[in-house]
Amino acid sequence: MIDWTFWFVKLVIAIAVLFGVLNLAAFISWVERKQSALLQDRIGANRAPIFGFRILGLFHILADTVKALTKEDWVPPFGDRKLHFLAPVISLFTVLLTWSVIPIGDVIRIGGREFQLQIADLDIGFLFVFAMASLGVYGLVLAGVASHNKYALMGSMRGASQMIAYEVSFGLTILGICLIFGTLQLDEIVRAQGALIGGWIPMWGIFLQPVGFVLFMVAAIAETRRIPFDLSEGESEIVGYFLEYSGLKFIIFWMGEFIASTMAASLLTTFFFGGWQVPYLLADGFHFPWGAAWALPHLVVVAMQISSFCVKVAFFVWLQMQIRWTLPRFRFDQVLSLGWKQVLPVAMLNLAVTAIIAWLLGLGKG
Image 1 (cartoon, rainbow, N blue to C red):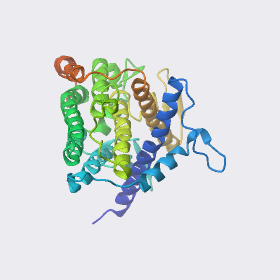
Image 2: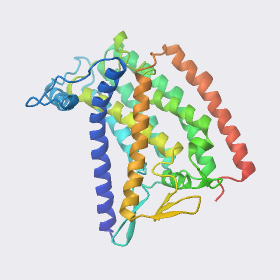
Image 3: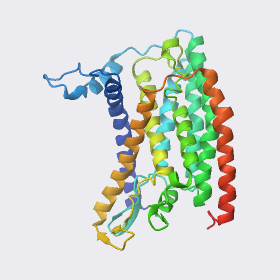
């Protein structure tokens, strides 16, 4: 018999996450303009008023949307029209689908039942994330091939080789966390990080895998193709996999890039900073190491958990933008050399050392 209550709650969670992520991507486009302006001593976006109100340039989001929807959807004469349409869809779909396994909170109790604040609680959560990251490369390659433009093709080949170079390291760094906690389920990994080391320090991944955190962050930024790893775009070189895209299709690629940045931030939060965990906060309230306790209503605890997750994600999105507007672009040979000759060997060594320590301490056995 179909459990309609379960599926209704899951549908509400899915709509809330999808609505939040898509709107967050639009909002981040404004944040990046203002943040880059602050770094470069400029005012930033402020030229789109409505009835004389500018609201720090927030109406530029609406202006961009209107412009994208009214621009001509142009396809190169010798390009493949079907693949030209499919490429941005794949790029956006894969990164949106990854959000289905991200836990944004613990559980919420409704009518005496508990529901996981996660769209899909998969036993292979880590493998699902890795699979979606791998499928995203098809959007880049198809965009270059379908455009029938050698510069667009060059950009897509750059992007594909770059993503392949860092995908291996991307997976190896997460494997260290999976070894320690003995599971591939993202919600179980987050719950395990609620334990305390020595009774005081939260058992977050950053304390257990500091080297893995640095490597994962480098690989994640490279996977999202943001400066200093934006060789797949290279606007100053007139090379970019979306060179022959305009209107709504270009916006889809653009939104996919911002959503990928939030996804990288959410994965950093989930694996290395306790996800929705708040230090010393349990299901019934705060329990401090010195013996004090502070009871809280269930909905307050849930709100604090979701807020904790959102604040951590917002910080890492800000950090990625700070890096993007601080560091210069690498040369293409430097990007591949860093991925294959430096990040990958260190990631393999880190995993080997983690496996040995986990075996000696008996970690990950359940």
